[in-house]
Length: 441
Image 1 (cartoon, one colour):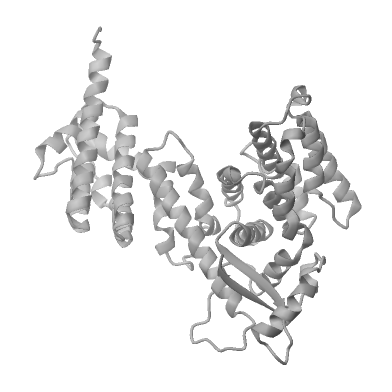
Image 2 (image 1 turned 90 degrees about the horizontal axis):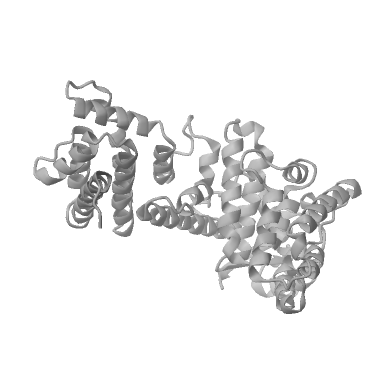
């Protein structure tokens, strides 16, 4: 084995990093949050942990090697080691203090030491980076929603976190922390939606009325009503199961034919309906056409599903697609939500892929004011509701009530007739005639 200078140098950096990781891992498990914060500030702002010269020397090795990339990686991973452990130990309140360290005035001072000057310049660069914006997602739920400088896109942070937990190059601790926080946000939304829909329209007076978790105001009850009674949505899980159940007898071409029948996109506007169907049809049948005679496989199903998600959202990750704009601005956004939900039912494992595309949409539109993005925000709210209803452990039951006798037994007797409704116009539903009951499946 031949040892080169580059390899020896690389191993030295890795050993220094590992020492720093182990130090913070031990600290966050054994010391108070205030002590952890103090050591973090001393190391990464002043490069001086007085009670551990070995750790100071470890960071010094990274600085003197002038390895900016490894410094950023080390800094990020230490942040997420701390965040992960504080999440588990329910010390989330201290994450704000961790992020606040990057506002410390010392970062912007010009020291005489070349080593400290390098450290401060790198910290300033970090604060301006996407990595720091990603870190700030972990404190969004503790910011005031009314903050004047709060971007509307931050309300949908559970999607933005997908960039972190699906990125294999991110530190493991970052992926774990992002996934935990995203799941927590999804569960909180489900809970708030269940509470809101259970209370809205109730004759019971509550001391603390539940806040509407969407931007749809009281129309949310009409939306939930529609989604629970629209025939295509009610049956799509069973239809997806039947489609996949016959997959062994299909060629890839046969699968595409049946897939289009399953999607069954049609709306009242014939011109728009034809345009959307033609675009979906042409693109889908061009996809992997050389394999049309081959037996369809799970990988081909996933490939087809991801292709459709791309075409319905933001295929190139830069600009929304033509299909997205048509479905968003020229039809009820619910049509787009239903299509995406049907695709998701083909395989639950593609949900992170869908969330990445929604995150890209949020990032694209968040450069514009909230007032200019109402249709986009409504679409995301509708998608959130759809996922909460059909992809969670909460069962929602819609019932038509007798206005003079609102009881569960009356509700049960009226629910079957209502569930056969195929009306797709939200405005035609009278929320006062219906009640939503939610319960764990």
